[in-house]
Length: 490
Picture 1 (tube, helix red, strand yellow):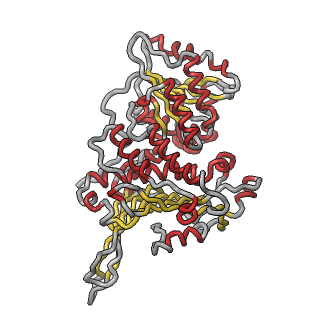
Picture 2 (cartoon, rainbow, N blue to C red; picture 1 turned 120 degrees about the horizontal axis):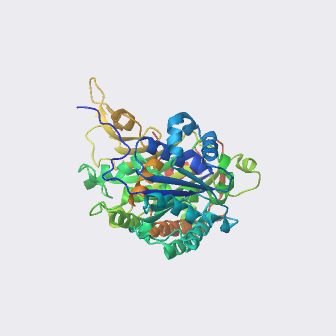
Picture 3 (cartoon, rainbow, N blue to C red; picture 1 turned 45 degrees about the horizontal axis):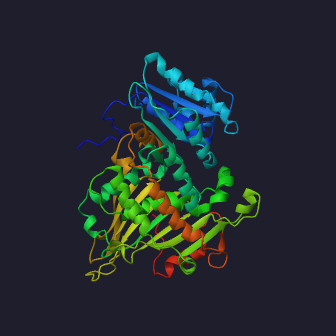
């Protein structure tokens, strides 16, 4: 049987003429992720045949100066782009200088877009990417409305969409306010709230493994599953993200979005079909069923930590957590009594993101030492799915040993695995919302997080110190030990 070959995407239809405008195009997000993804998509002929990329920034650049600026910042682009490819990409690129402190500077953006459409008498779809600091999201929406950038055209019904980066709000109230503002100008099906973890191959594979294999779904409930763990561990410190991170902390930076999204995919019911709203209906149902925290439950079921040297690194005193571990429950019949353990942190021994589903041990075992089966989804690095089984060691007598059935992406598929941003940008161009977050998902996740931040203080959630390079505060180990369990990391 031939080895399957991975592919970024199979376009089912030719994309219509499109202009993608990136606000915040001179920032790190554009240099590290967006421009490399678009450049690779251009090389693989995944962009619309008639495509314009408008990069909006404060600096006084022309197109070539802007691209050279990005090339200097991006090691990925410097390695991959040749002169011929660079010139082809430049022909699609437009740089526009705009400053949010001077909204009048955006006055000419609408005319510039119209001038690019007129030579061929075409009406391009207009897509806008909010790649700025969250404080500018409302201003961008107002600019789009004020300067006529949301108007239709005579030729055909122009599609207008916006893509909004995280964080989407910093608590429930601010998320609701931002939702209200965006829904004032856009319909829900025009708003794409991104969580780049949704574009990772193994996260997308969660639904496939569950719902395309009859082996698992009959066992996916409280009768057979003992507990579920979700770990997002990083070996780096906060580094250049210090200013943002100190305002957010581990809970808001990772748990509110990436980790709760993965939890909802692991726990959701099977949707009737793969339409975006039905998938998101099931995810919302899980998020709304998360048991909220109280002062008493925080003390028993949550641990905060901060690595030693953090305050020196950011240059001030701070009570921001760089590590958090928690235990929660999903108040639905399928999951009654099954704990979900989440942990994330900085300055840990290694960088790894994985979900492990721990099945219950056999009620009666014919052999000695029948350990529980564990299904692990490794999100990063070295994407893989592993099922730990009990086997007999060759030789006299019966001695058991646990080994893994291992599906590794790098071994099973030839070619590159498409980066998350590339997949999500292509879905944005196509108008596919399945991997993006709906407004009620955002609000349900913030409601759960607010039940923590609204109830924790130094008494019921002290900030434990831990050494960089360690596994985090010892109290996180005790969170599991009191339930006669321990954290699992391959």
